[in-house]
Image (cartoon, rainbow, N blue to C red; front, side, top):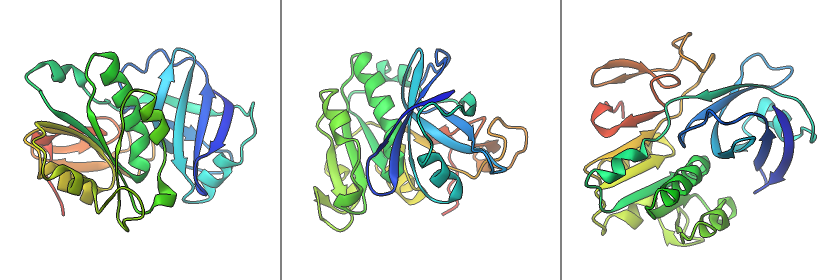
Length: 242
Protein backbone atom coordinates (compact mmCIF):
# COMPACT_ATOMS: atom_id res chain seq x y z
CA UNK A 1 0.00 0.00 0.00
CA UNK A 2 1.01 3.63 -0.36
CA UNK A 3 0.83 6.46 2.17
CA UNK A 4 -1.68 8.96 0.79
CA UNK A 5 -1.85 11.35 3.71
CA UNK A 6 -0.88 11.85 7.35
CA UNK A 7 -2.71 14.15 9.77
CA UNK A 8 -1.86 14.81 13.44
CA UNK A 9 -4.95 14.60 15.66
CA UNK A 10 -3.21 15.29 18.99
CA UNK A 11 0.43 15.66 19.99
CA UNK A 12 0.98 11.88 19.71
CA UNK A 13 -1.99 10.51 17.72
CA UNK A 14 -2.00 10.46 13.91
CA UNK A 15 -4.46 9.61 11.18
CA UNK A 16 -2.92 7.94 8.10
CA UNK A 17 -4.64 7.28 4.79
CA UNK A 18 -3.32 4.35 2.75
CA UNK A 19 -4.10 3.73 -0.92
CA UNK A 20 -4.55 0.21 -2.23
CA UNK A 21 -7.10 -2.52 -2.87
CA UNK A 22 -9.44 -2.67 0.16
CA UNK A 23 -12.48 -4.46 -1.22
CA UNK A 24 -11.97 -7.45 1.07
CA UNK A 25 -12.61 -5.44 4.25
CA UNK A 26 -16.24 -6.40 4.65
CA UNK A 27 -16.62 -5.74 8.40
CA UNK A 28 -15.66 -2.91 10.76
CA UNK A 29 -13.23 -3.80 13.54
CA UNK A 30 -10.71 -5.65 11.37
CA UNK A 31 -7.05 -4.65 11.37
CA UNK A 32 -3.92 -4.48 9.24
CA UNK A 33 -0.36 -5.51 10.10
CA UNK A 34 2.28 -3.10 8.82
CA UNK A 35 5.98 -3.70 8.26
CA UNK A 36 7.93 -0.64 9.40
CA UNK A 37 11.37 -0.63 7.74
CA UNK A 38 14.13 -1.24 10.27
CA UNK A 39 11.85 -2.97 12.79
CA UNK A 40 11.51 -6.73 13.12
CA UNK A 41 7.86 -7.12 14.12
CA UNK A 42 4.92 -5.74 12.20
CA UNK A 43 2.61 -3.18 13.83
CA UNK A 44 -1.08 -4.25 14.09
CA UNK A 45 -3.43 -1.27 13.77
CA UNK A 46 -7.24 -1.26 13.53
CA UNK A 47 -8.92 0.04 10.41
CA UNK A 48 -10.93 3.15 11.19
CA UNK A 49 -12.70 3.49 7.83
CA UNK A 50 -12.29 2.26 4.28
CA UNK A 51 -13.62 2.22 0.74
CA UNK A 52 -12.72 0.13 -2.31
CA UNK A 53 -9.31 1.73 -2.91
CA UNK A 54 -8.15 3.22 0.39
CA UNK A 55 -8.35 2.92 4.17
CA UNK A 56 -7.65 5.10 7.18
CA UNK A 57 -5.88 4.07 10.35
CA UNK A 58 -5.43 6.09 13.53
CA UNK A 59 -2.52 5.28 15.82
CA UNK A 60 -0.68 6.60 18.85
CA UNK A 61 3.11 6.93 19.01
CA UNK A 62 4.17 4.45 21.68
CA UNK A 63 7.69 3.59 20.54
CA UNK A 64 10.22 3.74 17.74
CA UNK A 65 8.12 1.88 15.20
CA UNK A 66 5.05 4.05 15.46
CA UNK A 67 7.25 7.16 15.61
CA UNK A 68 8.78 6.09 12.31
CA UNK A 69 5.29 5.51 10.91
CA UNK A 70 4.24 9.02 11.94
CA UNK A 71 7.23 10.49 10.08
CA UNK A 72 6.56 8.78 6.74
CA UNK A 73 6.23 10.93 3.65
CA UNK A 74 3.30 10.80 1.27
CA UNK A 75 3.99 8.23 -1.44
CA UNK A 76 5.95 5.87 0.83
CA UNK A 77 5.25 2.23 -0.06
CA UNK A 78 4.38 -0.09 2.84
CA UNK A 79 4.19 -3.85 3.11
CA UNK A 80 0.77 -4.49 4.68
CA UNK A 81 -1.01 -7.73 5.58
CA UNK A 82 -4.78 -7.28 5.38
CA UNK A 83 -7.57 -7.65 6.19
CA UNK A 84 -6.95 -9.50 9.45
CA UNK A 85 -9.23 -10.49 12.34
CA UNK A 86 -12.94 -11.22 12.37
CA UNK A 87 -14.53 -7.79 12.83
CA UNK A 88 -17.82 -6.75 14.42
CA UNK A 89 -20.98 -8.60 13.41
CA UNK A 90 -23.77 -6.04 12.96
CA UNK A 91 -26.18 -8.53 11.39
CA UNK A 92 -27.30 -9.34 14.95
CA UNK A 93 -28.85 -5.89 15.25
CA UNK A 94 -31.94 -7.18 13.51
CA UNK A 95 -32.42 -9.91 16.11
CA UNK A 96 -34.35 -8.06 18.81
CA UNK A 97 -31.68 -5.47 19.64
CA UNK A 98 -33.52 -2.25 20.44
CA UNK A 99 -31.04 0.03 22.19
CA UNK A 100 -27.39 -0.62 21.21
CA UNK A 101 -24.48 1.46 22.46
CA UNK A 102 -21.06 1.91 20.88
CA UNK A 103 -18.26 2.60 23.37
CA UNK A 104 -14.64 3.45 22.70
CA UNK A 105 -11.82 4.35 25.03
CA UNK A 106 -8.70 6.28 23.96
CA UNK A 107 -7.06 4.73 20.92
CA UNK A 108 -9.93 2.23 20.91
CA UNK A 109 -12.13 4.97 19.43
CA UNK A 110 -11.02 4.77 15.73
CA UNK A 111 -12.46 1.32 14.89
CA UNK A 112 -15.72 2.35 16.57
CA UNK A 113 -16.10 5.11 14.00
CA UNK A 114 -16.04 2.50 11.23
CA UNK A 115 -18.57 0.46 13.18
CA UNK A 116 -20.90 3.43 13.72
CA UNK A 117 -20.63 4.28 10.02
CA UNK A 118 -21.62 0.73 9.05
CA UNK A 119 -24.49 0.75 11.54
CA UNK A 120 -25.86 4.04 10.20
CA UNK A 121 -25.60 2.68 6.66
CA UNK A 122 -27.60 -0.38 7.71
CA UNK A 123 -30.33 1.80 9.23
CA UNK A 124 -29.34 1.86 12.92
CA UNK A 125 -28.11 5.03 14.61
CA UNK A 126 -26.56 4.00 17.92
CA UNK A 127 -25.68 6.07 20.92
CA UNK A 128 -21.90 6.56 20.98
CA UNK A 129 -19.93 7.08 24.20
CA UNK A 130 -16.24 7.94 23.95
CA UNK A 131 -13.86 8.00 26.90
CA UNK A 132 -10.55 9.82 27.29
CA UNK A 133 -8.21 10.74 30.12
CA UNK A 134 -8.26 14.49 29.41
CA UNK A 135 -9.75 16.99 26.95
CA UNK A 136 -6.39 17.18 25.16
CA UNK A 137 -6.74 13.52 24.14
CA UNK A 138 -10.18 13.78 22.52
CA UNK A 139 -10.22 12.61 18.89
CA UNK A 140 -12.66 12.04 16.02
CA UNK A 141 -15.76 13.69 17.50
CA UNK A 142 -16.39 15.61 14.27
CA UNK A 143 -16.23 12.36 12.29
CA UNK A 144 -19.09 10.95 14.34
CA UNK A 145 -21.05 14.20 13.98
CA UNK A 146 -20.82 13.89 10.19
CA UNK A 147 -22.68 10.58 10.58
CA UNK A 148 -25.48 12.42 12.39
CA UNK A 149 -24.31 11.16 15.79
CA UNK A 150 -23.49 13.49 18.67
CA UNK A 151 -21.04 11.43 20.77
CA UNK A 152 -21.25 11.53 24.54
CA UNK A 153 -17.79 12.40 25.87
CA UNK A 154 -16.30 11.37 29.20
CA UNK A 155 -12.93 12.37 30.63
CA UNK A 156 -11.28 10.94 33.72
CA UNK A 157 -10.23 14.36 34.98
CA UNK A 158 -13.51 16.07 34.08
CA UNK A 159 -11.89 18.54 31.68
CA UNK A 160 -14.56 17.82 29.04
CA UNK A 161 -17.96 16.16 29.03
CA UNK A 162 -18.95 13.85 31.87
CA UNK A 163 -16.33 13.33 34.57
CA UNK A 164 -15.36 9.68 34.84
CA UNK A 165 -15.43 6.69 32.53
CA UNK A 166 -17.70 5.55 29.69
CA UNK A 167 -19.62 3.48 32.22
CA UNK A 168 -20.51 6.66 34.14
CA UNK A 169 -22.44 7.74 31.05
CA UNK A 170 -24.02 4.28 30.72
CA UNK A 171 -25.14 3.42 34.23
CA UNK A 172 -28.55 5.10 34.16
CA UNK A 173 -29.47 3.85 30.67
CA UNK A 174 -30.99 0.49 29.69
CA UNK A 175 -28.79 -0.65 26.81
CA UNK A 176 -29.50 -4.15 25.57
CA UNK A 177 -26.34 -4.56 23.49
CA UNK A 178 -22.86 -3.03 23.58
CA UNK A 179 -19.99 -2.82 21.15
CA UNK A 180 -16.75 -1.92 22.94
CA UNK A 181 -13.10 -1.29 22.20
CA UNK A 182 -10.55 0.06 24.66
CA UNK A 183 -8.41 -0.90 27.64
CA UNK A 184 -9.26 -4.21 29.32
CA UNK A 185 -10.60 -2.58 32.54
CA UNK A 186 -12.98 -0.54 30.40
CA UNK A 187 -14.13 -3.64 28.52
CA UNK A 188 -14.79 -5.47 31.78
CA UNK A 189 -16.76 -2.52 33.19
CA UNK A 190 -18.93 -2.29 30.06
CA UNK A 191 -19.37 -6.08 30.09
CA UNK A 192 -20.78 -5.88 33.61
CA UNK A 193 -23.44 -3.31 32.61
CA UNK A 194 -24.99 -4.94 29.53
CA UNK A 195 -26.80 -8.24 28.89
CA UNK A 196 -25.02 -8.88 25.61
CA UNK A 197 -22.36 -7.47 23.31
CA UNK A 198 -19.16 -7.72 21.32
CA UNK A 199 -15.79 -6.71 22.73
CA UNK A 200 -12.58 -5.90 20.84
CA UNK A 201 -9.36 -6.97 22.58
CA UNK A 202 -5.78 -5.86 22.06
CA UNK A 203 -2.78 -8.19 22.38
CA UNK A 204 0.88 -8.29 21.47
CA UNK A 205 1.09 -9.93 18.05
CA UNK A 206 3.91 -11.28 15.94
CA UNK A 207 2.40 -12.81 12.81
CA UNK A 208 -1.13 -11.37 12.94
CA UNK A 209 -2.79 -14.37 11.26
CA UNK A 210 -2.72 -17.13 13.88
CA UNK A 211 0.46 -19.04 13.10
CA UNK A 212 2.69 -18.08 16.03
CA UNK A 213 0.07 -18.41 18.83
CA UNK A 214 1.67 -15.42 20.58
CA UNK A 215 -1.60 -13.60 21.21
CA UNK A 216 -3.51 -16.50 22.73
CA UNK A 217 -6.11 -15.72 25.40
CA UNK A 218 -8.27 -18.03 27.50
CA UNK A 219 -12.01 -18.08 26.79
CA UNK A 220 -14.84 -20.15 28.26
CA UNK A 221 -14.40 -22.66 25.42
CA UNK A 222 -10.61 -22.86 25.60
CA UNK A 223 -7.67 -20.86 24.32
CA UNK A 224 -8.18 -18.67 21.26
CA UNK A 225 -5.97 -16.36 19.23
CA UNK A 226 -6.80 -12.66 19.39
CA UNK A 227 -5.50 -12.07 15.87
CA UNK A 228 -7.28 -14.97 14.16
CA UNK A 229 -10.30 -15.84 16.32
CA UNK A 230 -10.73 -12.20 17.44
CA UNK A 231 -10.02 -9.43 18.04
CA UNK A 232 -13.82 -9.33 18.53
CA UNK A 233 -15.24 -11.75 21.09
CA UNK A 234 -18.87 -12.19 22.09
CA UNK A 235 -19.87 -11.65 25.70
CA UNK A 236 -20.61 -15.31 26.30
CA UNK A 237 -17.09 -16.30 25.16
CA UNK A 238 -15.08 -14.08 27.48
CA UNK A 239 -13.29 -15.39 30.53
CA UNK A 240 -11.86 -12.47 32.48
CA UNK A 241 -8.35 -12.60 33.95
CA UNK A 242 -8.77 -9.42 36.02
